Image (cartoon, rainbow, N blue to C red; front, side):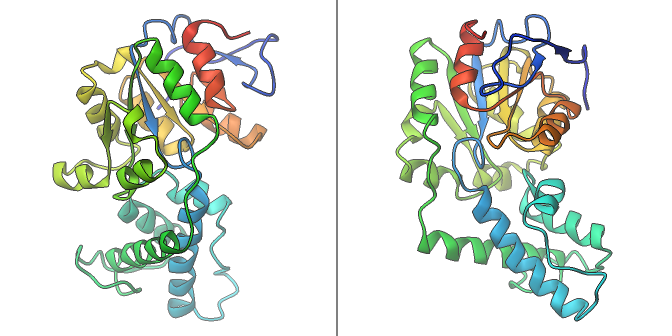
Length: 277
């Protein structure tokens, strides 16, 4: 949860690059490495994840509550952001079902895709997402490679972190895998049994692989659960990334503990270099 001094308004921030909040005193200074969330920060894959969740959840709604006007289709924008964005698949499935009052047994990791258990719903989402990946490419945001090269030129250590098993392969396909010192993805999460966000375990593992204490590292996240995880993990600089300008999203990220909310990674480079306006 949020800690430290609350954000302080500043009139000098450029609205196209950052919101009207300043970092905590000295938050960016002393940063030796950056842990980047993957979906929505590095790769424009959040829409695919949301679409895959919609396939799985809408099937479940139709099967469990057919024709129930109190159970509208899954909202791939608002509900995705509020309930599943940034979380491990099982946690996301469980959060949505609980929010809708749809009771299912937990099941087991080897449950077949469907709506017989929480694990089955998570497997259905994974199946839908894998199918989508086979039919379309996941683009990397234009600002990512230049920002990573700039940070590495200054000696900054960089890690990518994701609960998705596909993260490493997608970063490699995007041509940016070599720009990271380490990648922690869903395979590591399963092997090490790391709890999902808002637990900070994923980010702490990435920082450890960089040889850094959390206080000497920054985390860049676009999801509220991820920002909360970084704050709970004691990271020295927590950046919320909101690529689609929205005052409500800015406020939500700040409430979860973001020191600063930025619009792009070029602004992050400026901030870490001490060149922000």
